[in-house]
Image (cartoon, rainbow over all chains, first blue to last red; front, side, top):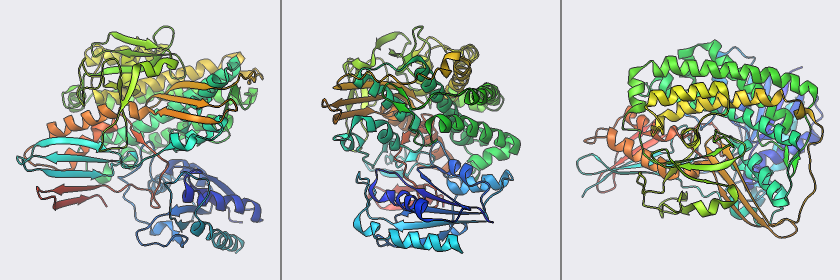
Length: 152
Length: 488
């Protein structure tokens, strides 16, 4: 059986940025597949490397803010398709792509597939533990798509 | 006078969003440079109306990379607010966890952030100036060693704090659970290995940086030098202390200027504002704000590793003390005003953190199951302080008698250094950019001026591809972009 990690990401006090955390909390109750591990938190690239080692498939759930996106839109992105320049990283840590490259370089058992379910957000600047209405409305769709994917 | 404007936006390897702007005059020399922080965080406003007991969990989300500092400082502030002293075992557990955090955070900065500048080289190609470039230089086995010790020290936070990012172990009057004998045995090995790793890092610094004349010249040279006041927590013997103590300030000549309890911090520190940025500029109240200038008449002070070493009379542990003496011998005495020496000071502090872990974990009292004092008094005001990796961190809460917050004031570590960071960036830019000649290597050397401070303008923001794009715009006198440099 393939081991799956589902990780909801976000800041619990930044309005729509909480979307990944909220979806993870629902999935913790609704997913019955025992090969799936569901976690959530605010985590950086290097810490994420610790989390994903040993899993066959990883599904990240996160917020996204694109130039022309409509709040509530859902994207499924395969991480290999995301370009990244590893010369750039946040302070005290490294970006996730660099962490992946580092994991491969070290010979760690890395996931075969990494996907991101990303929800287009409207507001991540207001201090709130709730998402905006448009973004909240996308939660059932993301939950269903992930449950279907894990059940395959 | 005609100006050109160069913008570095956002800064690479700087948590959170910020940008450097460099204005050139018509000769192509630097007329002015500054850092702007466009984001308003607003946690102090958000906190009002919340229960004070929530603050250790709320304030730690200010940042996804240094939550333990906010969490622990907030816990200490709640001790003060509720008038409770944690039992000895609780204090020791807090301090042990906190030193594990300081150790892993300092190492992370050296190998992942400051490291690329020195190990790979300040003017190396951008594509190599990162952790992968560092691994390429030092080898995969050493890279794995860095990852392993980091993972094990973070496991201490995970075990005692419930989770490694945004831990939940500090409560008013103590911690959430005692340490078991099994935990102690595992942590002893981690602590001992941390000391060995700290020795390894300091040796690596000696071999790679101190043995390279070019690097030493950069560290001791004038480009990265400012004569300021310094601040840090000290213990009863005026030795560097991370968890608790008195706040000590020394003047630019190294003489003690002030030493005070945290409850008196507002008598000593004031915060200035500028119209062009959201970040505040703390300064020594009794010296006064004279602008972005150094010297004895300017209230600008510096915190973080260099500030802490300068503000103390030594390190609190024996091995770290030996490195401290070598540090000042090499830099020509105390205080050291060399900003880039902060990287070295950081490794010496990592040694103290590791040695302190060994001391605490071998103290039998740390296993005492009594880890909570709940003899709470009616809350009104609480003030706490801790040394975060990036400097002195102040939390100040006022509440009604039910513990609901009516006011919160946070002076976060990086903010203490905000004036100095601006001064350092401007000085480096003035020294390095001449006659309009700007290239990537020079701009990286300007960035090195602030990277030494390990600044954190954080907010746990992140992008889907995980990187922060760097764009440098050069403007002519008519504010038209004449050149754009992009890293991606």
